[in-house]
View (cartoon, rainbow, N blue to C red):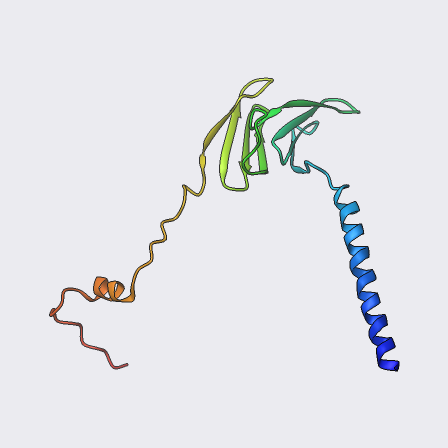
Length: 154
């Protein structure tokens, strides 16, 4: 009888633990921020640029209490295919933004920058053709019947 009681307590404890996790994970997930800041850069000591994961760019300017203003979105308001992971600015005029899948965007010269796609750093998919072991040997072995180098005894 003692084993049955301890088994019941273990099962009840696991059930309560699973229930607490289920309820807590749902409530904690609702509090997560939608667009975290991924990059911040200071220009000329008093000007800051901040970019969020969804591509929003904010800037602050000059003064003891900086005021933040929305500059623009890398993707032009469209849904991003991949979140922004890095941002760089050059004297506040030229911006670069890199996404997680390797896409590079740039904007130039203006109070409201117009973003344009530059290219993908990784260049596209890597061809991965399967090859048989016999094809691999024939590629490196040479023509059939050709003299093979003598093995070296070391």
